[in-house]
Amino acid sequence: RISDLNGSDSAFPPINNMTKMKILILRSCHINDTLPQYLGNKTNFNDMQVLYFTGNSFTGPIPNWVGNAKRPIDISYNNFSNEPPQQQSCQQIQNPTVNLFESFPMSQNGPIHCLTTTNDCPKTFNSFHINCGGERELSSEGIVYDPDLDPSGAATSKIMGSNWAFSNTGHFLDAQKPVSETYIQQQNKTGLSKLYQTARVSPISLTYYGFCLENGDYTVLLHFAEIMFTDDNTYSSLGRRIFDVYIQGVQVMKDFNIANEAGGVGKNITRSFPAHVRNNSLIIRFYWAGKGTTAIPYGPLISAISVTHVSTTTSGSMSTGVIVGIVVAAIVLVILIVLGWRIYIGKRNSFGKELKDLNLQTNLFTMRQIKVATNNFDISNKIGEGGFGPVYKGILSNGMIIAVKMLSSKSKQGNREFINEIGLISALQHPCLVKLHGCCVEGDQLLLVYEYMENNSLAQALFGNGASQLKLNWPTRHKICIGIARGLAFLHEESTLKIVHRDIKATNVLLDKDLNPKISDFGLAKLDEEDNTHISTRVAGTYDVVFNYVVDIWLQNMQCMVI
Image 1 (cartoon, one colour):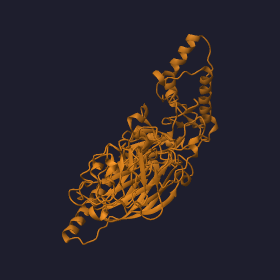
Image 2: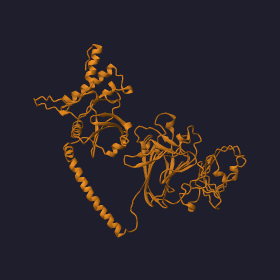
Image 3: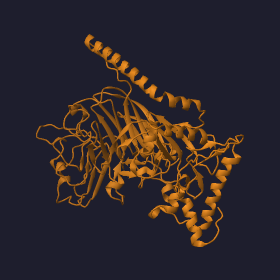
Image 4: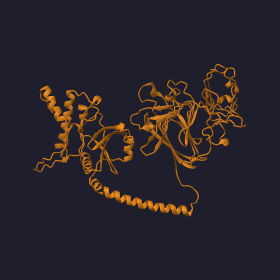
């Protein structure tokens, strides 16, 4: 294995007698020669498993044995010719184990040679977004990232999206895992959004290629997070990943170390670069020059790529008819927007006034943030259901785990409970009261964002089915009772605002990971008017099974319980 030699051009080394060789890697060695025919001799070189000649200056025709090979062959980044016509070109070589990316001079067939079968683009694009090594993902900014899950390893070049492709050069010779787990990395790191929990890696060179792009200036945003090393005292914490980054053939980062730049492993970082697109193509290359750790894991790693056009303006003048059409359409659109806005304001005016009258001491979330956090309210994230509506588990972009309580604004009761709960609990802070992080009001959606309670409700712990029911010993039950009492004492006597909850029941007592209780659901709560001598006898709240539970336990044990 020889790579990254400095000096002048050289000929291909005379290895025709080294027939027992299994792996031959001559990467970036300034070889200016033709590819020998004898390497395709199955009799003499039958043991050969890997051939890598990327990054040289090979010329002349590509031998016929390359197209018929059943072993990984990488001859990318060379200068082969595709003349005369009878010679094999990369379109004729349909072999998934052969990487011919940029193996011909760009002047002959354009930069998309050996990736697409035609230079014709049905349409032009002004962006592409890739979740490298991951599934289709919606970011908190509303950007949809294409999936990039192809498990192909060595000597690979494939079209993936409608206007992008990737090429991988190199082979992890010391890899112990399957190819699908070597080149695609997925790690569940606490505190990282899904965009940074996956990545694509390469032992030598990883290139992402955008084609059919509108010419002009672009912004290239690269997302990184080191998810393969650890920050403990194990051997894995000693690794250093160092690589270079090129955009349109220009080096934009040299000796880039993700962990150093991000301030540690498991932390995300982005780098933004300008790029100019000519010939409707953009090339982003991540290259390992042999620096840093030389045992797995090594080589370049990328989490996501976002490429967007800086300006959508185009040159040339528009006809009078086009201008008139645009003006008329704009006027009609403005009229429709005004009418729609008036209707919307009329429906929301009453509720909006109630919210404005409140001096909210809490955060306001957007619906986009909530949808991203809950994976668009995926059913797998649903953790509860009540008269108010469902409750979903979510993860914010900063890694915070939340519980999202959804109410419907279509009913006046829902609006009243929503306003009441925000107005009361946003002003209260106590260890035995559930913490309100914020709310969201968009359209007919009303949502409350709470801290996430790992053990759900007391009702679930006592009366749940199967694994959801917890075995609570008496000391734990006593701790829960004391916690509830402290929360009620704070509401009734210790807080500045004296509050009567009016709906204490097992479903409204939540349990954290340590089974500490916290009172929730203040929709029916009201201020305690101390100076009012009139006592209301109106029933509030809902039926619960706690009373029956206490009676049953007392009858079974014939002993007193201190609650």
